[in-house]
Image 1 (cartoon, one colour):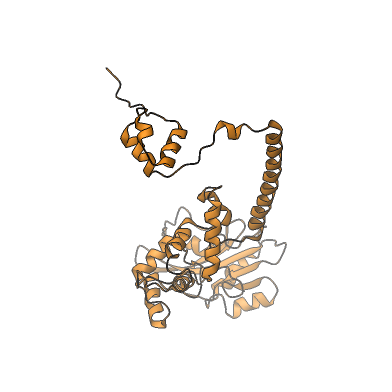
Image 2 (cartoon, rainbow, N blue to C red; image 1 turned 30 degrees about the vertical axis):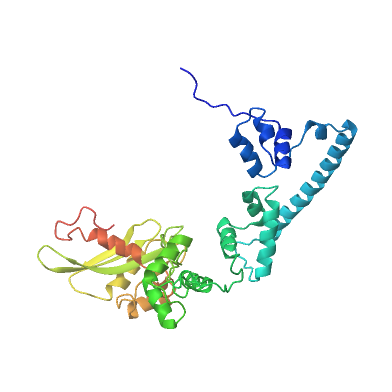
Length: 356
């Protein structure tokens, strides 16, 4: 099968220059060149041709020119390296800086166009730290005006300005409005007269620029671990709870628990609420030999603050602290034990996990 690829014919450039200088295509047609090709030579612009005679220079002159050019390139590369490092160190960037003067923008665009003959546009913008969108925006506005207040009519009259977007960002990321939802924040901005934009626009800008709303806790985080003792009889917890028995009667249970060993030191059950039982079980727990004065952690109940308990504290037998008042720790250790023991019934048969 014969090939369908056409071979493009090439002609001597001197014959083409002769046709152009004489303005007559007969010289070309006499040598078998198609008339359409010769007519195209007359219509096309003249291109510069480098012949072998021009390149056939003296070898010494060529080597000298190469050395001069190499030295000049080394100097330019050194200057460029210093400029790039200086821009990085000083943090100079056009991404967050505005050039309000139109003449400055014209000089920058003119320098970019002159540099495009030697460097690609991507490399030039990377050195200047100028985004492509901003560069092309300046190119579009070059015919009209490059100032921040253009004389051309706005193509989008409802488009937000730079100051309005900046105000939205400040309100979204502000700690002052962290408790206000974004939709409500848009309405608040309209009432304050700062930005007139819909909540949909606010949500779009938050997603586009990835702004983060402050989520700081108003109250401090609660401790994961409560108070802990490092030796027996260092910290005691005392409390009273009410248990409903199977026969619908109530039992008042008083108990003292050691923080270190988690052992019930003394306890008593009564059919009525008696405030003097707390002092009684504390004396029962203190009959064991104590190496130091225990710290008694209590809540604000009347069974813990009465004359009998006050006498024990005044005697120096123990030291009393009010939970969540004198200290920030709660009396949760004995209360959590009550939650466990509430599943048992202190009847005549008792409970398998009775105190002690």
